[in-house]
Length: 406
Ligand code: PMT
Image 1 (cartoon, rainbow, N blue to C red):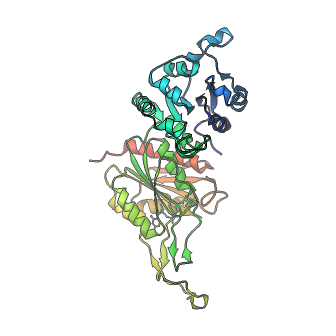
Image 2: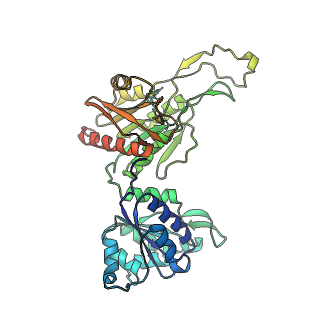
Image 3: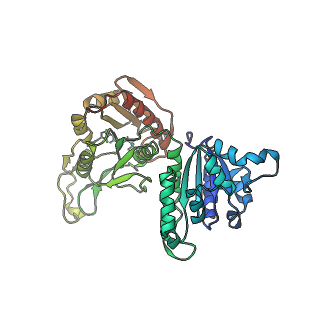
């Protein structure tokens, strides 16, 4: 299902002495499944919570614990581990290791490895909420930020010490996105992008509406992929069952008219707009305040036309702004795509076959035909996230060609 961003990447995970270390074992397992090359470095106190054998089994690699190994090749472990890393993640990061890193100490394998690396270092604090709130801890975390460390803030909630509050280790879905971002070229750094996703719902009465089969997966994958590339992402979303991708700002809408308002509010500030939402072209002409009794339903339902958001965006497109549409077709994909590209003043359109086998609506994968004024390109049938990655790569090269805003 398409190559993942972690495949072949060297990820070092520094584990410190906190009960949250058991959660990080699951993270190591996830990364190994995505074909990352994971090396685990454990502090002495970490081994009190989870055995090195556990991390060795999950990562498929030796675990480093002592400052100096047994064999001659181990003498420079602290140099070699950090030198080859694509990224280093310290999780859970205790108040103690945060304090030692803030002061540039190098008195064990983990802190020495950190001082010796050029890779980006991400830190996931996890501790009792009073320790997390202590001025010394706040000062040390600020020092790490000033030194260029990435801090992934802890969550609030119930902790192992049976207390509620800030200090709970961040969730894997959040950490995973920051890890992915740290190993992805930040081609969209400094760009604000707008993505639309999901269906719209056009109400008939309090109980009934017109809608379509869009799950939002394609649009959410585009938003997730754009965040990983360094963009500031606004996701205007119809009703879906999906959580908002970490780092993305979501604006929830129901109807096409609400989506129209939300999109036009944000579009002017965005350098790229990608319209993956399945916007209803029509709505019931009359919206009933009360549920229409079945015997009173007029089977010849009168419909009113919704605004064509993409067409309006095409009219308002600014110099240097890129407008990308999607097209849900079941035949003549290239011709239909080219028609929409021209009619709506698009820079690129992704045409997907909604009648295809596991493409288009609802599924985990897609296959899109890209149509632009310079020709067409068929992308592989792959996951929607990989499709999104490939689409952003092409959008990024268009961005580099497009005249910058005046
Ligand atoms: O959400 P998933 O389940 O993952 O499914 C993904 C998808 C199939 C919904 C997606 O890949 C897709 O094809 N989205 C566009 C669906 C659609 O509305 O296609 P269309 O050919 O009807 O519209 C063409 C373009 O005009 C789209 O960019 C659409 O956002 C836009 N549009 C359409 C109608 C309207 N009133 N305003 C619009 O802006």
